[in-house]
Amino acid sequence: MNLSCETIINENEKLKLSDLEKSCLNIFDYLNLHHNIKLLRINIKKNDSFENLFSCCESDVNYHINSLEFKQNCDTEMIFEFLSESLEEYESIKENLNFIKLSLQIFSQSLYNKYMEKTLNELSLVDSVTGSYNRCYLNNYVGNLLSLSNREQKKIAFVKIGIDQFKAVIDEFDYEIGDKVLKSLAKSLKNSIRESDIVIKISNDEFLVILLNVINENNAILITQKLINNFSQEKVIIDDNSKQTLMKTICGGISIYPDNATTIEEIIKKSDIALYEARNRGRSQFFLFNEEDTNKIDFF
Image (cartoon, rainbow, N blue to C red; front, side, top):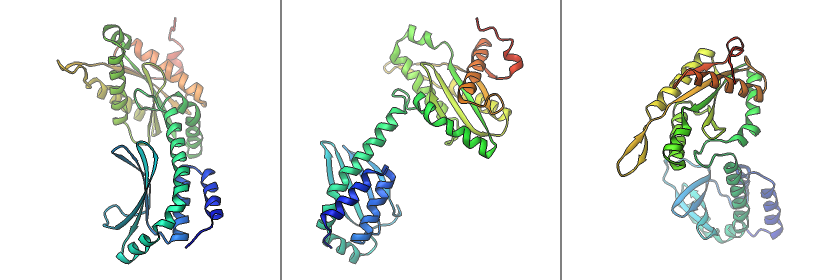
């Protein structure tokens, strides 16, 4: 059962070259090969909360569990759980825990580093106020959606959402209340679309909703109306003591890829033009971009 330091070090070097998901899988393969571990669960524990990184077991089965914990910092631990279906297997793993620990003491640090890399990368793509994706995500990842759309010959709707008279909220209240409105809108938008669709915060008071695989323009219009109607019913609490609430409205500008444009820059520009026209029509309005009508728009 003894493994050379060289074997462990070589395996650890492989982990450093892999992403988080692949690293977890590599560790499982290593444990399976050298320690006959058949079922594994890896969790990160931060204070009293748990986040699962890897699991290859059924959630509704009662297993015999051996575990090893490795402290990463003052409030974070990485926990490896070795699950056994039989008591005999459990006892066998228990006898070899010290040998397993030698490897995982090294692997756990590399795995935690991968976890932090992934976490920091995700944070750089997410708006800190609303939890929605930000412009960095838009610039780096949305282009792939257009390529996929071209291959599958399906349409994508880009809906630019703007809050009506948002500046008045800041002027009358403050930025804290403004943030509450933004959070409420982001939540409402996400709850109104499919999991496969995307919400991106692209400016102070504007969001971009990307609707994948829309059937036609009417489909995009119906969803935009749903977004507008759902948010109009949201009540934002502005005073916890008095329970005073604020209700706001939004407008939406729609453009369709590839009908209206064939690049990210152009399709978003068309959505922006459509939102401008929607706002000109009043509160809770939408506008579907088309060249004929927008040529008549006076922007100045």
